[in-house]
Image 1 (cartoon, one colour):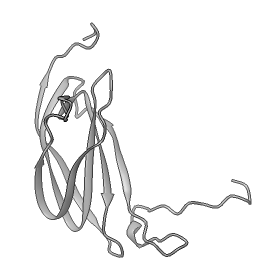
Image 2 (cartoon, rainbow, N blue to C red; image 1 turned 180 degrees about the horizontal axis):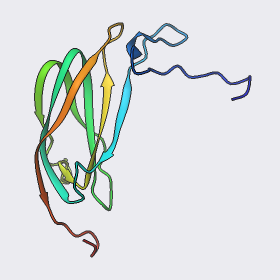
Image 3 (tube, helix red, strand yellow; image 1 turned 45 degrees about the vertical axis):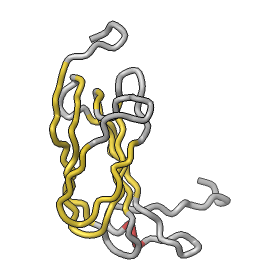
Length: 138
């Protein structure tokens, strides 16, 4: 980094919502969970997720790696303090499946300024696996 560059303020692990930019505006916490195969390379259909949030609230989106393509981010909406279950969406407006693929990734955004938000658990529920062939390859 040269002396002409300035660092972009970003959240951290401990108190990300207490950081602000040069104008004094709070910076949202955004983190993405890398694609995970949930323990198997098989094709999966997933029913939903459960979160346990101690305080604050989060906006959660997900996407799937479907072998030949990745789905767009699909919003599950806002999750507040407590235990919340939400179904994954089944079909897009174009008829594409939104709850199945080889791997899943999550994007989680903290929505509360000036409070430490605590997400305790995100659990994937209702996983069904099956063999699937993409372009002639198992």
